[in-house]
Length: 402
Ligand code: ADP
Image 1 (spheres, rainbow, N blue to C red):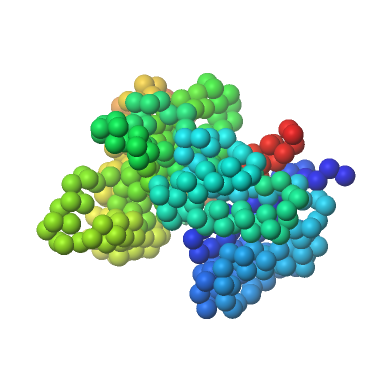
Image 2 (tube, rainbow, N blue to C red; image 1 turned 180 degrees about the vertical axis):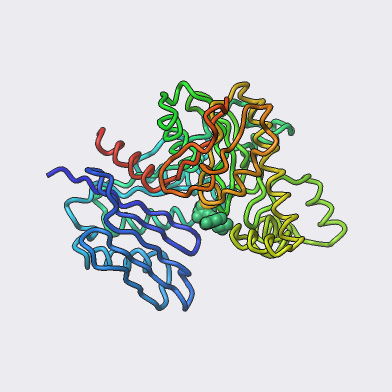
């Protein structure tokens, strides 16, 4: 029997998300989340999707990622799908930062783990957790192939003129300062699915992909390759996000240091955790912001307007970068679910060939779909992202090709 199952692990600083996917039919066998790792209030939410059984919860301290992964392995084993199962082909890990060297899905070995660790200074929040997740999985199943799939990989094709910041080259190179981009697994998956929706090969279409979740990023994709993306050295740059500012004048940082006496760490925390929609109006959930707007809340209205204004600027910029655009594609929590955001982002862009059909836009659904009227020169699409499936596809393809 050829093993066909892939366990996808997404290890964050205090959480591990996982999905067990059977590549024979792309079905999900189990999904879950271990959260608040390291705290007294840790929880594990586990849901077997094959064979019924229903959701299960565990509460109580998970001391570290080791403990979390062991608990996950136990839950899977209780469903007869443990890590020792002969049907498990590979564990696929989401790794946030692969830098310039790790640009394709890669089998985990010591050299590669060292490289991920070397990148910790440019991804201090994410890469340490990713390394821990990999090491723990290796300990639990030393004989099983493990594959790392990098969030930065899709963007590594960006031309130098998009990737470089206009700063002193020696300083930039010495400290690896450049645009790397993130959410690449999502941008790659969504671009491919959007081309499918348009009935074309990815190499034939130019797309503006808007991944609007709690983190948000835009990318300009020409013929299946990333030409530019809005996140930069870190995920802070670009669009207005749930709690991140996105683009600001870098001199704001010096100003806050000199005038407000804030330390580097304080400014870092301000821009990453207390800015964006949350900083502007006290809420970072678009649903809540819309509710407040309906009640006439001025701060929520302004936050929404700033969010949309930034989105429009990127649509315009990437339109110019690409020259011709086949479709603007919305994805992730806000992009997939918020009709008002999609409508507002495209409003007034008819001269660019962009329009949204009110009814199509309002109709929900989990499928990829067009929401532009038939006459629109540039299509507007909603394409649900599926980063876990993409990680599973890439990890499985790599072990199957060995
Ligand atoms: P991430 O993976 O970055 O945490 P998601 O892609 O899951 O984020 O998106 C989460 C965000 O999606 C929420 O913060 C919320 O703003 C938004 N969201 C989810 N559902 C809806 C909805 N029905 N309408 C509007 N916004 C939504």
